[in-house]
Length: 108
Image (tube, rainbow, N blue to C red; front, top):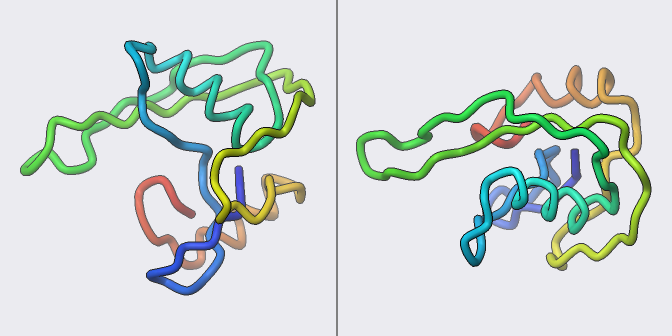
């Protein structure tokens, strides 16, 4: 997970790494690329756990949620200036803090 500043809310949110499918990538390749770009980690194992449509009445967009395991530190080459840092505290602590005030479907 990453901590990212969101200007409209004027606050830092805890988010899942996310991005758009580029140049005929499949969803798994996109998830792998975004994880590395936004956190500096590569997952030795990655699996899709859920796919959903966040705006069924106005869009055909699909959100693919993946779980990465056996993470290996790689080159941190994030592509967004607004990323604060990869979340380094325990996931349990982050989730407990984040669920007190959720903001959107990919943001805790």
